[in-house]
Length: 193
Image: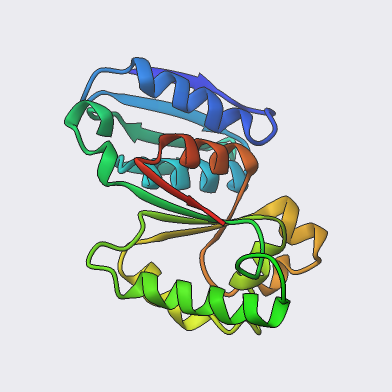
């Protein structure tokens, strides 16, 4: 069993170290990551969920948190890579030109994703795209439908802070740019708008 001491290490270092360790860990064995804050725990659990890996955590007597992730054969080794669709939205409109039309198009696009036989594995929101996942957005119901079908909805924390809407996030979770880059890099199919 591999144990990583990530106490005092800022985000996204615990996630990066865990991902590196998981690449070297045999199928069925566990990687333990010791962290000192709940945000790191959440980010590790999000990474495990995105990779389809079992994950648990246990609060330690010293208030640290031990996160345990069980390794398994990667999607590329099982031949599943090509079936993983990730959708990344870097703006709250679709296409260039008229913003009103772009708003109509992005709403229709997200609704269309709910009608696919196999919904995206993940949807990533960054820059003004994060505005689609906050209160007042006209696509929240569709995003919640996708989430209920198993799509992981993630919004960039830096972007939410920049637009001062982090407390208005209505669907999904807060993530970081490393996790966004990893999800895009690991996607079998990527739609980047």
